[in-house]
Image (cartoon, rainbow, N blue to C red):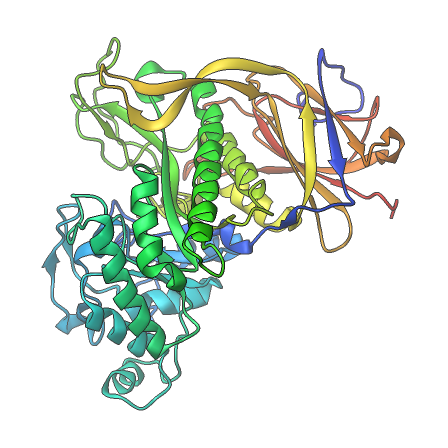
Length: 553
C-alpha cells in the first residue's frame, strides 16, 4: 500500500471533524446528475470518437451501430451513464434532424455553422438512439426551437406508436416500435448571438411555449428542458417562465471553469477551488427560479439541468494550433514561454484531464448533492464532453481509454448512496482569490472573488444496503488530513473499520492517463481500513469514498 493512502498508523497535523446526521435526510440524488453530453461536428465527439467508419475497432455488421467504436461503447457502458445530451450544444441551432435519417449514402453533407466544420449526417437520430440503448443510457435530444413543425415531427418519428408516414419510415429504417425518448431540450443558449435563431427573452418564451405545447400533443409524457441563463438571470428567466414555465420540467444552466496551467505550469489550487464558484451559481439560480415560479403562480418550479459544465484549459492564442496526439493528449508543438496574461487566449480541446480536474469534478458533484431538498434542485447534469474534447473517454485511431475524470464518474455512480445526509465540516481551510469560472476581467485575466476554501469537502449518503457512504475530497496538495466523523452527535457511533476506495492518492497533481498508461489515475480499492483516533487519514489531492457499516455487519 502506498504510504500516502488512508492508513492505521500515520498521524496528521490537520484534522476535520465532520458531523453527519443519519436521522433527517435531505432528499434523494437523481441518477440523472451522472449524465453526459455529445456534440456533433465538435472535436471528435462523434466522428473519430463514438463513430469511426472503416476503423478495425468499429462495428462492421449492418444496422444503426455499423461504424460505432466498440471500445468506446464498452467504456461508456461500464460507466452506467445517465441521460446523454445530443446533438449539441451550439451545433443544435442549425441542425435538421430529417437530414440524418434514412440510407446513409443518401444523406446530405452540410456546412456546420456552429464550429466551421462539415456534417456528413451519417450518424443521425437512429444511430444515436441505438447507441444510447446499447450503452444502457437514456437519450436527451435537443432541437433548435426555430421551427415548431420540425420539432413536432421529430417527436412523432421517435415516439409515436400511430401509423403515419414518419413512423413507417422509422420502421423502414430499422425500428418498428417507438424509441420513447423522454428528455427534450427546447433550444440551446438562445440568448446568445452566436446561435442561429438568437432571440430576446420574450421572443424565446413565446416560441418555447408553442414548441412545448404541440410537442406534448404528440407525447404528453415528455420531460422538457427550457433554456436558462448564467447572466441577466432575472429578466430572462422571468420571461421564459411567464410564457412557458408550466411546460418546463427543467431549466438549463451552463457553467464553465477555467485554468491557465498550460502556460503557467501550476494552477492546481485555482482548479480545485472553482467548484465553490459552481456551488454559488447553482444556489443563486435555484433560489431565483423558486421565487419567480411562486410569483408567477406556477404549480411547481422547474428543476435545474446543469447540462453543460466543465473545466476549460486555456492557452495563448499565439501558440501553434493544438492537434490531437496519438497517445491521447496534445501532439508535439512549440509552446514559447509567456509572461503574464496573453493578448489572446483560446480553449485547448486536446489538453489531457489531470488529478486536479478530477478533484474539481468531484467537488461539483458534492455541490449538486447539496441542492437536494431545495424546491429547485439540480436534478440533471451533463458535462462537456463524454468522448474526446477534454472528455471523460478519449478515443484515438489506436484505441480508447478513460481520462482522469472517468474514475470519478465510475466511483460516484456505482459506490455512493442516493439518500443525502446532512454533513457539516469543521476543519482547516484557506482564504483565496478564486476564479469565477471563465469570466474574463476587462483588464485581462480571470475575474476572481475572495472565498474560504475548505481543504476537506464531504458528501454523506445512505445506500440501499443501509451503509453510510461518505465521499471525502482532500484539496490540500501535499498534506494528509484526518477525517473524524461524528454520527448523530455520538463519536462512539463511528465504526472501527471502513471500506475505502481512493482516486489520486498515489499520483502527482498533474498526472493524467494515456493509451500507453491508461490507469495512472484510477480507483484504488484499499479494502477494509481500520480507524485510528476515531477517524481515517485522507491523503493529499485525492477523492475517496468510505463505506461505514453502522450495524457492524
